[in-house]
Each structure stands twice: as structure tokens, then as C-alpha cells.
Image (cartoon, rainbow, N blue to C red):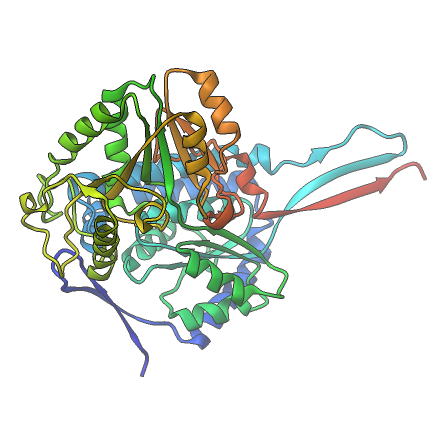
Length: 463
């Protein structure tokens, strides 16, 4: 008897979806079909691939309201925000489609008498995308669309928390008329996924998730000489300089911390504030956080939904309690958030001050609606603390001095440096992490490099 995958909604703990796991034999058949389809797909022109992909995006975005409701029920994001992910999906997809022809064009070398020389970007074969639940479409699109545009075929394994997201994408490609075998989905156990990675017909693995998950992916691919792209976690810092616009910084950083209940790889998890503006910043921050409404995410009035599951909320509660025991001060009265019950995924937002790096809340990824705010003496101390992390995904500097921001950013150990913004992914920029935040690159023109391989042509014509 095949195992069944159950998705419990964080709204009320009820079973929302059940799907049968694919067997290892099913997985092998899917991979074989993808490898066979690749032989034909790679021969199509970039324009033809773009036509299919654009039609799939058209089919997907027309269902944005239903898709938004499904996101809410699967992972708990407030309904008022859920459909917004569809717009982000379209932005990234359309951009990567629009640049494909130029990026994938042959690189012609300077003329050399008697020779014709050029470099061509070739598809890899079968790309296996393993996507997470927190931004189920925004994470998946980063590899799916450029992989297809580059001539690869794709197999998508989505999180057990968000299986309908994979199915929605499959429906969109089917409506677009994409030939069979080019884009497929699978609901599979970790053991089956590990076996798929070892299959010689899988040529590249695009994984987004935890550091622990990334370690498992790398272990499965070890010694197989195939590409692995890893988009992992973060403990992203922000630094508010003395010259920052405080109301603007407060408004944007509160959103950067608490949107999606803090369940964002590039969400802000620690804030360093210059001593001259510490008090007004903290006062404004606390006041804005107290205005959040924690509740049923299907209610339009709710601005903070539940975390994905009770165990995730318990982990954050432990971090908060440990910090308080070590001397931190909690600024938010959680009794004003009656939905916050100790054994549920509903967790009130929290702000901690009097924090330092001895506390897990300032070093260990929280992935929840909490932030530590620490006072600093100067830029040098802020820079040292921002870099004092095993992660390096994004970092933001809040200032009116662009030159100073660039000077500090040059020394930041991170994949993306922001000034006066945070928690945003621009598809025209390379998305990359350093240290334990991963390796590889998605989006931008550079996002095509890991999904293709260069092939050199050296033709002698003077005989």
C-alpha cells in the first residue's frame, strides 16, 4: 500500500489535502519521460519556448484569487496578502523569459583568418526543482522558468505543506499546450527524493529550504558530478544610522520583520540602531507592531496569520524565553493578542531589546514574528555585528548618505546589499547567498549560467 501525504492547515489543524506519494518506480518513470522529452525540447527555438512559457503564465495569473485562497489555507498567510504572490511570480517569469534570447545567444569571438569560433550555451538536461512552502511560487519560479527557457525539462517536487502549488503550475503548463514530459510534478518522500537525485538522468538540482535540507541534498549528490543550486536560510541584519529617516525606517523594517509571520529567508531578523536614534526608533517600532491583528488568516482584517505549524511557533517561543532569561526585555504585551496560545501556531509579534550575540535570538535563524534590536556606538560596531553570522543572504543599511552606505556595503558579507529597503527580490539582480545561506545564483542574466553549459565551436574554413 502506498503512503499518503497529508497537509494540515495551520488555520485550525484540519487535514486540508491528501495525496498519494509516488513510489521509487513512479519517480524513475517520470525521470525517464523527462530525459526523453529533453531530446526534442532542446531543439525548439527560444522564441517557441517563450511562447509556451508566456501562455503558461497567462493561464496561471488568471486564477490569482483562487490561488491566493489556497496559499492561505495551506500555509497560513493572511488572505489580504496571499494573492500578491501571483504578481511577484509573473514579474520574475516575464523578466526571465524576456532576456532569454539575448542571454542564450551564441557568443561570437573576434574574427581570426581561416577560422570561425563561437561559444554556445547548451541545456543540461533534466532539472529537478525542490521548492519550499513559505513563498511557494516565488521560490519555484526562480528555477522553473529559466530552466525551461534554456531548453531543459523540469520535474518539480513541492513541499508537503503546499502540494496544490505544484498542481496549479502543472495545470497552467497543460493549458498552455506544453508537450508531455517537459514539465512534470511529483509528490514524494525524502527517501524517494534522495533516490531521484542519484538517478543519472537528473542533471541539476535546484533546492530552496533549510540549511539542514541543503546538507541532505548535497549528501545525496556527493560524488555524482552534477550541479546543485542551494537557496538556504538567513539571519538578515539591518543597520539604522544616525542620519536615517526614522519614521520611514520604522515603517519599512516592521514590514520586513513581520510580513508572512516572519517566515521569509530574507526577512529582517536582527536590527542594529545607532545610539543617537535608538530611543525614537524603538518607540516608533513598538507602536507600529502593537497595531498588528493576529487572527484567522481567512479574515480580511487579519494582518498576522499563524505560523506554518505549532512546532515552528514553539521553537520561536523558546528563543524568546531564553533571551528574556538571559536579560533581554520584551516590549510587546502578548496578552493583547488573545489568539496567542502556547500550544498553537498562532504567535504574537515580539520585539526584544537589551539583546546581544550571546542570545540565540541574535544568531540562530528564527523564521518567525520576532526581532532583536541592539544599540550600537558607531558604523564600525554595526558592521562587525552584521558580519558576525554564519549566514549571508541580505543586509540593509538605513541612511541618507549613499556614499557611506556603499562604503559599508562593500565590506558586508552578504549576497544582496540594500539601502533604505529590505525583504525584496529584484529579478534583474542576481539572487545569491554566501556562507550558510547557500551557493549558486538565480535570476538576472547570470541566472542562466548554472542552468546551461558552454560548448565551444572551433571551425577551420581555409582548406
